[in-house]
Length: 446
Image 1: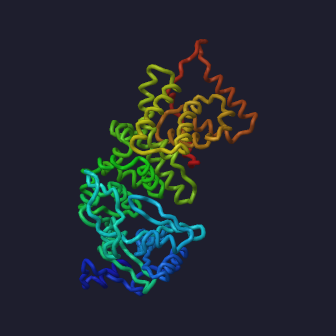
Image 2: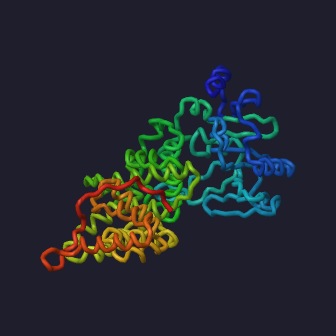
């Protein structure tokens, strides 16, 4: 359908200030596929004397035949005017003000048309404020990528394309609007968005859009860690984590978000790389099945390679469990300088890590089984084994322990204790990585 649209309108030259307008009978976007909350908001804006357009990923995904869940609206109404129209509206953001309008159970993001700013920013060219308002035409060229600058209106149910987004959709190409160097410097997070959309949509990144990323990736270090944490969630918890992780490494951006992780992988940690890849694949499966995923598990996997490497080094001078705890503290402290990790995710991540040594040793198994983080820690243990770590069959042992009755559990505990006794009568030193054992497929995240 996209090819037919392009062929039909190709002879018509598009002026920079005049959009390519696709009438209702020439595109596949239907009101039936659009959130009723978004439609109500657009109608109320128009009733209030304002323009209201559906814009961004919602229009893009509908044209691609998808079923988007998020819908954004652009309007010429100012934030305060929007707020007066909707009782459940709340203005958020300072650098870039937007309005969240609650309509029933949905929250729709409504933004005022952006205009051309005065280029004021910091010494790296990063915009500190972007609340200059404009027209539909200026708003289109202020958006990030052409495929995200397509507008749908209820007036005549047409689609307006100012930047060639429809043609890029046909080519399955991601292209930034304007000069890439300037746009990335204005907001370095646009580089992450390029990777995220390419991974999600399976698009190629236009060379002019892609080439500056390797050069400008270090600008991400100017972005507040709290904002980068939110970007990490979008990168790895939207159903395309596997493709996104590969692209992050290819374009050198993982080194700016998770520098210790990238260093460990570059040093040749193959099991660590496999662990992360298994986690990403497992997360994608859960997202597609509409099962919950948690940032705590993602971060536990992402930071495990540098944590395990540091624990390896520290275990030469201290007991393994103490080495684990010290390594975890150091790695987390370093990571917090790049992306924040809220306590509600940091604490369960630490608990998952802290339980790993105890799960391998099988000490006090019934007490561990009752721990609130047992399921997550057990899942992580299975992923470690699936990635090639040698854990003496601990994953199989815990899988069976959960399936048998209490009498059989007591027998397994006794056999485990007997197997741990040294033959010479002396206490056997604990091995950090015992002999290998088979593991079932990793269980899902909890």
